[in-house]
Length: 307
Image (cartoon, rainbow, N blue to C red; front, side):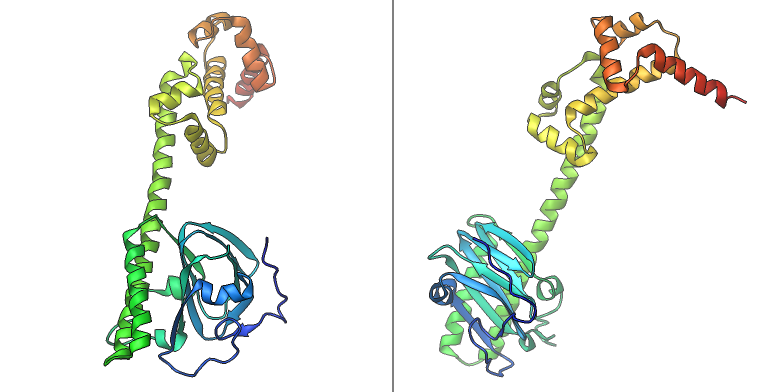
């Protein structure tokens, strides 16, 4: 079930969801279970925004639907959702979702000369983002510990209360930033891996196209599945692996038609075709003309290009 969007004139501006007034405290921090507020709203937090609150919603395990303005995202597993002040957002949760919501007044995150709370965290504090965690991720375990320490500090208010909250908030942001950078590195490494696989495929294709290997043989030689090879070819070249195999063979046929006088029947056997008739059908299907027509057209073009 989707979260219905509110019109620009009707988007409520809350302190905490459902509360219109926020205590004017520059050190204001609030933490609560997802269930404590969502349960009484039917597990639906309608689109709204906070004028001066930075929020992070931590989903420990399960699923939820998130909306940022007109964009919606379905999340499964363990996630942190960072929401800077002023951004419209809403959530839908399954009943009894487990997680925490951390809310911090933006003044608390202003640059601190001693702790530098905000330094280096613009990607978290200025643009909404979602950060995923693997099951039992060490960084997620650390964040959960920091959140429990923040909850305990808010209940006890011991000596050095404000400094401790600053330090714990810094640890939360630093851990989120580490996970965000780790994900970026993983994505970059995955993309580099796809490019490397595609290069290896093209090199192998240049060596083996005369043997008329099927896509499965190329995938096996490269140590990947057919679906992985096809997906990589689609991402890197916009075509399936089978099309690239056919195009490489077609290219060699065209080169020989243009730059050699080799008889067509001999050419068929040279390029691995067991049947010259199939060789002719293969070319005509892909080039939309016969072998002789192509050779004649290309010879004519070369004659007009000579001085």
